[in-house]
Length: 224
Image 1 (cartoon, rainbow, N blue to C red):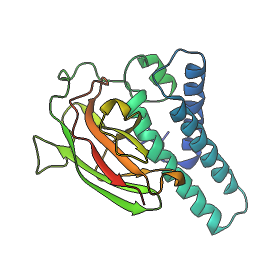
Image 2 (cartoon, one colour):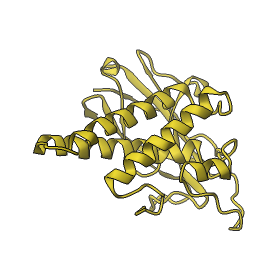
Image 3 (cartoon, rainbow, N blue to C red):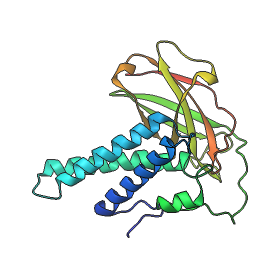
């Protein structure tokens, strides 16, 4: 099976089966109560991407138009864009085991490399930009390396905690929604009902064991 380094198959036919298997496995584990660390809305989103991708993919297996092909490509991009950070945030550490990752055709963690320490520096939001269409562009970097956009060693991404509403939020505990950002800039998609509301957000580095570093400052922007 042709795969990229992160085990996502490059060929559409193999990707279809791979995503269906991963989605089914996650549903089985979460519905049985074995995995309680994955928020229900993230499981719902995974199911949605799997369904949307498979529907678009099956349309191009027979006679189809260029519009069908474009839709298939768009759904593949959307599914990959969701599943990459999903894997990094929820499937790379306990309670998910090496046996689970093997069953989902994912890389197992290397336990022989240099020990990973808990992050000690802050992930800082350096810019928020409303792009329109209920989308916000977020740029971030490490406070210790202001001239670099690299993610610190041992971290699998920058965990964004956020909430939107009519008022600015200043309490970290109120930032109840999460999204793992694996590169900067990152574009956060929000629902239409968020238009005109405040987005309040803050960031922390997350390492490969799921340990979190210190908070950066809470930032705010009006969603357009």
